Amino acid sequence: MPIGFRIRAACERLPEALVRKAQGIPVAAISDGMWRLAGSDAALRQLHCGTPMCGSALTVRTRAGDNLMLHKAIDLAQPGDVIVVDGGGHVQNALIGEIMMTQAQKRGVAGIVIDGAVRDLDFIRRSPFPVFARGATHRGPYKSGPGEINFPIALQGMVVMPGDLVVGDADGVVCVPSADAGRVLDAAIRKIATEARQMEAIGNGTLDRSWVDEDLRRLGCTWE
Image (cartoon, rainbow, N blue to C red; front, side, top):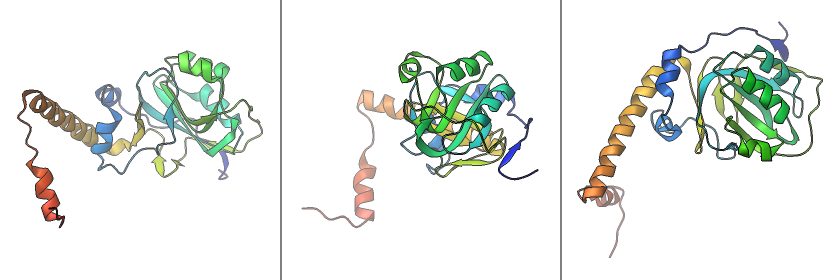
């Protein structure tokens, strides 16, 4: 199978129970559960009206400004998939717009992540269908390939393998390796519980802030 222009029609998807477990967990908590070294960079932003995104990755790599393989990925997608596209960060041509997004939503796709540009931004902003991208432009795409479907990709340092857990909200997008998803989600749930206790302590005025001065002293800070 030649590298660069190839399609793997099937890949192992996450168990439905793991996807359900991830639903509703904030991206920030999942990121904390991975020592804050995972996730997309700040330029990859939520563009839709705010519905959280969660699902199993269907990966696409495409030549800058070309969406032929993205069209095929939509045809291959199964309900609950998140289509994640390595477009090389190219924002001069949009890879997807209203028609393709409507088709993806009709097929039950859980969201789309584009390391590149989209168009029809007014439509996206009104829509609950999750769309994350680096930018928007009116310029349309080309359709001549090459590209790959369901092979490893990287979005500005965030590695995504087919079948990985992909979660997105207003803070951005995070990818969790499928083999580690259960442990990471458990850590995220513990983080949420810890923060809930902190919020309760703030509310009743009992939050212990002594750690701030302790850390300053430990790090050698001086003050008058």
